[in-house]
Length: 472
Image 1: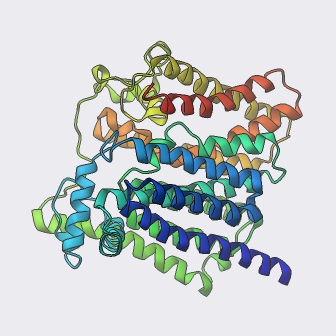
Image 2 (image 1 turned 180 degrees about the vertical axis):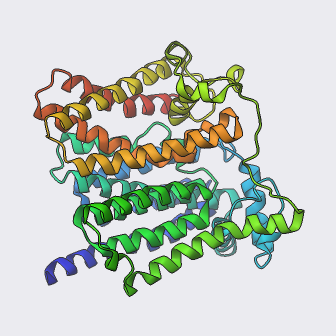
């Protein structure tokens, strides 16, 4: 046991060392964006350090996949401007600039992003100020590097969660990891300037400790998950979906006897509950402040009415529109089916591109992957080749996250409310379910097994081709 604790401490110190050294190198990177020699040396150092730090935990092949993912994200960082294919960039920059100049009056901001809690903007402003003082880095470059660092942590914890369900590191494991690191939309998300990326990181960390708590029946991991949930609530209200996920799982664990009431309300849980309450209060202080200043509730939940018959659009799926139209398209901005909008935004965001032929194949591959994943999960459940808790944890996270998007869409009656960026971390449970489905299909010797393998490989491959061929 002592050896195991020492080994775990060594691995965490390696990752912590990578994080601190990478912060320094990344700040240096953002200070000299045009000096090619500095850029190449800095990124080569980060890639080597990342590989060496993660190899003892993940193995060389998985850590190399993370390094290749970093190289992939850097393509977007270098070849696309800061404002390319972003959402509300000017609003977030305005909020960060205000917080940077008014650090003791963060609730005084009244711009377009005013309803967001200020915690992310405080951290981003501090990062940007340090980068500017010591490295003369521009605001946008330093913030994109900040996002890239958080997104790499998201990937690391996503792969750690995959290992909780498959420690054999077989082909299914690597396909699950590939779906997380090279998901088509990842290249847009990795260096985007907004509070979503920090929420992705915290979502991934929460999900890892949440799964580890339930599978290993260790209350210590539940404490960590609750504390991370409190921090996530400080970032964005979207974290409420995590409250529902954890609440449903805790209620079920109490019902079946996996968790005892005395353990849940023991004195050791007080710091976790204190952080959760602090996060909830911090989340709502801005809303209350805006009400006090304006005399009415100001929040992005008012009805827009741009979508007619929203409930019918949630329940319907226009297959011909999904397969024949590569992207969402401006002409159907207000009137697409909610499901079509969601699936396409999960691949390309809400934007139009010019790689139409690749996009059509990618749309079909995603639909095929989802269909075969469902087929394999049902088959594995019937033949009892899949652990029920593994299915339940991932299906619950996927279902509740998607339900929050549906409710947001019905409340606002606006098509962009179906944008998958609000629940982008569902890629992690989706990749795990795909991996479990492949294992179940192989165990039952299903004739559809190799087709499912090909579809799981095609989604990240076609995504790579789609974005890397942007200038071709």
